[in-house]
Structures are given as structure tokens and as C-alpha cells.
Image 1 (cartoon, rainbow, N blue to C red):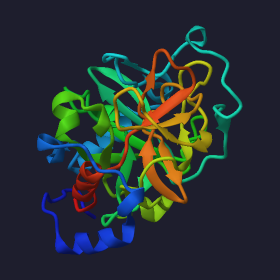
Image 2: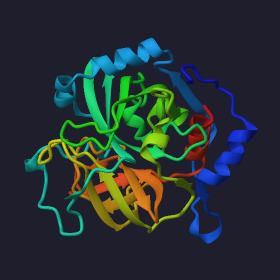
Image 3: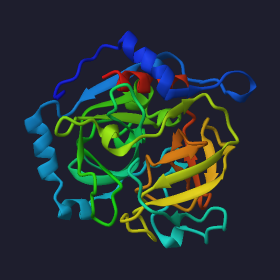
Length: 309
């Protein structure tokens, strides 16, 4: 049982990183453009005791889960949240159309509270030294900039109210200071470290995806999530498949045709069996396209801190 975690990174964790992280170098990799505070990791303690973890599980009643709203990125310049109404959307192309898929244990739905409002996002059970990491969007953990979430709960293989693996409560949250302090969209990825439940770590129960960094662009992805804004209802897992491009409007993000809406934020993008991005945002002038952050050295540093928690 590990109700309280330590801050320090360990040499043992660094050894485990070699087994759990896929990296690339040379022509296929793209440099991380972060600098300064982009490379500083912010840790936020959330529910470090068994009593506080039980309180979070009790908070998330079926009614609260059903009424939680999609949490999406607010407007900033040309960026905007994922379209939330049919009126704002064009008919999706065949390649962009998300398809409903069978729920799987390594993918799940995230529930949390920000500013007194209950929200939903998506997440991925991620291979890690502590076997307790969930990868999601930065804006599903922190307002960017602003407050951190409370009542953070992950439900693997969520399916229309069913939770076959139960609820897992985060005891610590990790994000890049570039996101926490100034909302840098290039760093809209974060990691929640889940508390053990009945002596068991998360990924021992669910399995996991390895995570890759600096793998380059123009990759074949399967993007997953629980879209909850119209025309979806957040009850089921969906997937978009295609080859990514690169954002030409100013970020370093991947670009993928995808019709998923709000609530899918934080859902994992899988390439060759490896987690390599997440659903982050869309542009208001561009229909049925999803953008996901490039996992570079900053994301790797944040992940490394989380996996050694």
C-alpha cells in the first residue's frame, strides 16, 4: 500500500524508463522548442491519504458522472474549444468520421472538478515505473494558467455508466510549468498518478500502453476518446484513424482529421502500439480536425517525474 508518495526521482526509475519509453533520434525526430520554464515540472498533491481517496470515490455518484460536462480548451487567439453544436459543424468526411469501438481497459474516462463545476475528459493507462500513471490533456488537470482540478477520478473501460475496473483516484498531478503558468498550448499534456486500490497498482489491473517521445511527424495514428458534446453523449469510446500532418497555424502540434467533440480531450493517440499524443484542441474555422501535442523533451521530463512518484 502506498498512500503517500515521495518527490524524488530515482536511479531505479531511470532504469525502468528505458523499458517503458520509446524515443527516436536523427531525421525522424523533431526538436522540442520549449525553453526556460518549459522544462520545469509542476507537481500538485491532490488526495494523498486513504480517507481523502475514499471521499473522492464517494463524491462521484452515478448522477454526478452523468451530469459532468465536457472540459475543453477556452478560446485563445485563433484556437477554440472543440465544436459543441451541430450548427458549428460541417458533415465529417469519411476519413475524419469517428467510429464507436469496444471499450478497452487501457483507455478510460476522466472525471474532475474545476471552479465548482464537474467535468469529463479522457485518458490512457500508461506504462511507468510505478505502474500508476494516466496520461491526459493539461487542460484536464489545470486551467492553464490557473487552478488545479480536484476530485480527479479515472474509470478504465467506461461504458455507458458501467465501470468494470472501478474508479481510480489521483493522489498527485504533474504538468509542465509552461502550461500551468502561461497556458502554452504546445505543452497541453499532463500526467495523473493514481493511488493504489486494495494494494494494487492501476496498470496491474488494466494493462498499459508504452509512451514514446520525439518520434517525429506524419505518423499513422488511432486517436481515442469519449466525446460528450453534440452529436455524442459521452457514454461510449470512439476512435479516429489516419495519418497525421503538422499544424501550419502556429503550434508544434500534430494535425489529424477527426470528428470527435468535447469530452474526448486527453484521449490517447496510438501509433504502432505506442502512446504518442492526446486530443487537445481544434480551430473554430476548421471542421472535423483534431490537434495533439508533440511529445518532446518537456513532456518526457514531466512524464519521468510522474512515473517515479
